[in-house]
Amino acid sequence: MSHSHSSEPPRTTLAAVLASFRRAIAGIALMSGVVNVLALTGSFFMLQVYDRVIPGRSVPTLVGLTVFAGTLFIFQGVLELVRSRLLVRIGMALDARLSGQVYTALMRLPLRTKLPGDGLQSLRDLDQVRSFLSSTGPTALFDLPWMPLYLTICFLFHFWIGMTALAGAIVLAGLTLLAEVRTREPAKRANSQAAARNTLAEATRRNAEVLQAMGFGARIAERWSGVNADYLNTNATASDLAGTLGTISKVLRMMLQSGILAIGAYLVIHQQATAGIMIASSIMMSRALAPVELAIAHWKGFVSARQAWTRLSQLLAMLPQTATSVSLPAPVSALAVESISVTPPGERRAVVQDVGFALEKGAGLGVVGPSASGKSSLVRAIAGIWLPIRGTVRLDGATLDQWSLEELGNHVGYLPQDVQLFDGTIAENIARFEPRPPSHKILAAARAAGVHDLVVHLPEGYETRIGEAGAALSAGQRQRIALARALYGDPFLVILDEPNSNLDAEGEAALAAAIEGVRARGGIAVVVAHRPSALASLDQVLVMANGRVQAFGPKNEVLGKVTRPGGVPLKVVSGPEEATQ
Figure 1 (cartoon, rainbow, N blue to C red):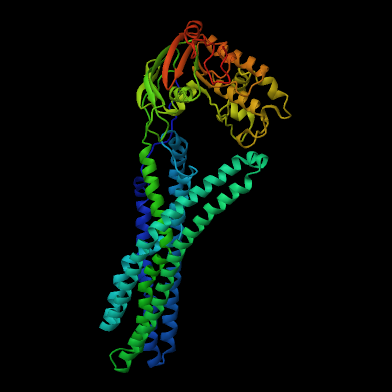
Figure 2: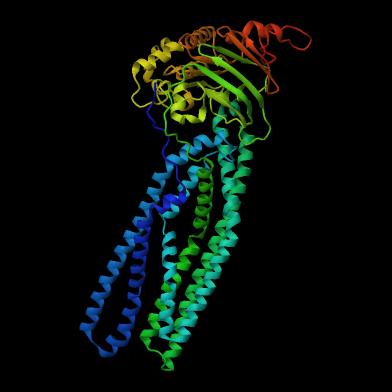
């Protein structure tokens, strides 16, 4: 059996994605050049009106100039509209190109490292970059290179007019640099505090029953109010800085505009300039300084987008492409765990150390041991969820990374301790949301898990919608449906982590039958034992303590040898409340 290679999409860097839009960006730059040349229309229209039309009292010239200027203004407006829409489309295209990759990172990164906040920062970062690209902020970056053109024309009008405009440009550029220095840290702090606030809000939503039952919701609400107040204060600081600098730049521009009019009037009085030059230079300077003022107004958004861009770049670099060019056949014979050591994501302390064993097809292994002995960490590494820091896990001799994630998933069934289902129908959850799954495969998995009769007695059967996280079902029902999901497609390796923690007697009988079914068809079952009944269908046992293997071999032989403190034979090694002598 060989699956076609339909693994995750090719991964790329943010810079490469942005480079793919270079023709569109070049088009925007070209349009910006035309727009900035057309922006001279107002100044030269005023110049002609004051210096030619009014002295000559020529109405036809005025009409001609008005029609010509109006046409140029319309053309300028059309170009600015196209430019803004093109920026919106670039933002949307960037999101479309990266959203799948960012979502995959959101899914995989918690298994590689410890994430701050609620783990959704990457999606917010992508939204931030897209929103900034779709705003008027980037237009300032395209208009800034044209400032020298306006300043040069101001100098052509008169030296002192040019000097006034240049002084204004220097002061506003200084304000821009000040905005960069002063808003960087508050923006970063506001972002981290927003993440902390969202984390607490999500934890509150998940634990609503506990808060209601034990009455400490008000205390958590008080804590949230404190976190929220910190966020609001930091955000207000950043906004105040940006707002203050924006107001200063606006007032300064108005003062400069009036100042240049005053200088123009002085030059007109001394017959060193015309009235047209006086008015045109005022408009010209306003246009020259507009991009700087726009940049200051959008500086907070620019800083946030730049920080988001940096985080996204680091995120995508952490998860390089792992696609393989050859699709391996489905494993059918053996599992080998070769001296693996495991640390939880983001931690340094190894919770599993130098564990090794081998299983042949048809084997059933029970992993037992006291709490915090490393049982769940071990099976996570066997399932390919956590990467061992040392050693390897092999199926039929091939390391797990030789399969794509999707292909490996077809060969692995996994039931975690903390069962999580997705909002959708029971059929969709059992079929792992496979598009157009064969009904016979869903029914086979449900029957193997002993959940078929339970499902068909529900009002809508397999089409029953289970709500977010399976809220419409009991804990036992969720666990049995998750067991059916683990068995879907007859995977070779089935890993069950404390699978009977929420099961009644009927559910435990179904679980035992499911494990026997896996073994009977030539699969391998690995079960973290929580109760004695979980070992009934297994033939081998691995005993763990303090992250190391204490014993491994045939069930009766191992359980006969292992003793608890005091020399009492141990039939099942588990948590103290579950251990039986």
